[in-house]
Image 1 (cartoon, helix red, strand yellow):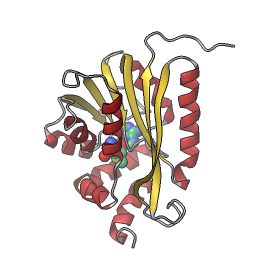
Image 2 (cartoon, helix red, strand yellow):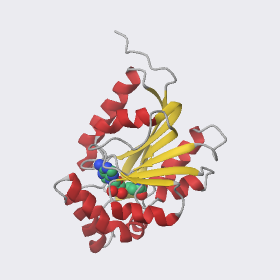
Image 3 (cartoon, rainbow, N blue to C red):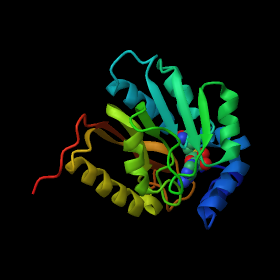
Image 4 (cartoon, rainbow, N blue to C red):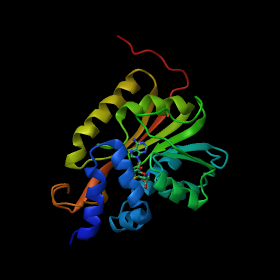
Length: 234
Ligand SMILES: C[S@@+](CC[C@H](N)C(=O)[O-])C[C@H]1O[C@@H](n2cnc3c(N)ncnc32)[C@H](O)[C@@H]1O
């Protein structure tokens, strides 16, 4: 049995928005039910991303400064906090989602920021790690934001990114992977992990499901920013 029709409709509504501002307004409206709905969908991206980042991250974690991009209601912060990360900043384009994130008390700083329209509100080389979980997808955070994520990351710092492998996101995923590879070839960062996860979350339609499993798959990527960038050879 798939997710309830009302839940499927709420998820579909967010992705139906014709423009980014409209979609962000739809996220405002979803904020109050977001955590309940993604729990019903068995959404595991925050857990998988935080576990991968913690594995790659050298101790000590408590003093490390992290930026959670498209932080939503703060699910990634809960997962990072329980793994010992204490200095968490967040940005999101939805005021409604940010209000929920604020109520967790887990972020030292939260800012409204629409990725693709404005720069991240942070100086260069400010963060030990940057996460973007559940938001690198068609109609959400654009791929053009990658250099901006790198800008605010310290040399030697880590980037933890996720995307989905469902049919309607495959074009975005292919373009994302091309851009990730291009940045690696230019010496901007080094790939530490690209982990394809089969049971990422429950699918909200048969067409989006992986081979009739009722689930969609997703990927966690961990990159480390190179200490000194070098130019692509050849
Ligand atoms: C599916 S939620 C993921 C939230 C959280 N990272 C998690 O894993 O639970 C996607 C979030 O990305 C935000 N978002 C989508 N596109 C954005 C953009 N271009 N700029 C800023 N935030 C964006 C939405 O407001 C929403 O909070």
